[in-house]
Structures are given as structure tokens and as C-alpha cells.
Length: 145
Image (cartoon, rainbow, N blue to C red; front, side, top):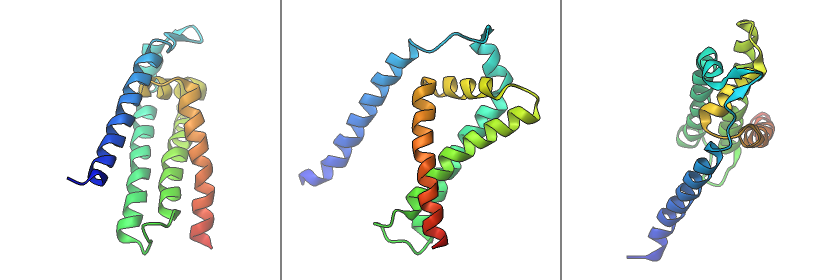
């Protein structure tokens, strides 16, 4: 069998292994309280926001894939990637903030609940979402232009 067929498999398995190891390490460092409230209570109060945020993230990824499949984009065009990841990273943040404010709750608690729900520290969650949300600007400019 050709080695080029195994490279994606090895790459995927390596990335998965690194992710699992990081998640186990980070799980030990996650806070158990925030603003003197137990994390379980915060997670319960913001369950809808977290679920919607996760759904919007998945929707963004599907938008990017659909743009490649049904749009007139080549495999090397980064516009669908930028739009998909941009939506996937900005929509959850916007939804969590909006829902928390509409419910009269502290958005910071919702952001903590979202981060804990991912099993990742806040700096990693919002650092990566922020970087990829910046890519949305590139995608928007490419679509308009």
C-alpha cells in the first residue's frame, strides 16, 4: 500500500492523541467554583446558551463544507473555510452573550459555563475562538469582493 494513503490516518490519530492528553491534563485544572457559585449550578443555569453555542459552532462548520460542495469554489480557495470557521467561532460567542443578557444573567458566567462544557480552560477556548473569529473578516471580504 502506498505511504501517501497512510499519512492522513497517522496525522489524524496523532492529533487525536494529543487532544486527549491535553484534555486530561486540563480537566484537572478547571475551576470548581466561579464567583462563589459551584460550576454545576452555573452549568445548569446556562445549559440552553451552551447547547445553542455548540449547535451554532457545528452549523458554522457545516456551512463551510456546504460552500465547498455546492458553491463554485475550488479546493484551494480559502473563502468557504474562512466563512465556516468564522461563523463557527463568532456565532456561539454572540449567542451566549445575547441569551444571557435577555435572561438577565451574567454573561461572564455563561462564558465560563461554555468553556467548562468544552472541558477546556477559558484561555484556550476563547483564545482559539477569537483567532478563528478574526478569520471571519477575511471570509466576508472575499465574499463581498
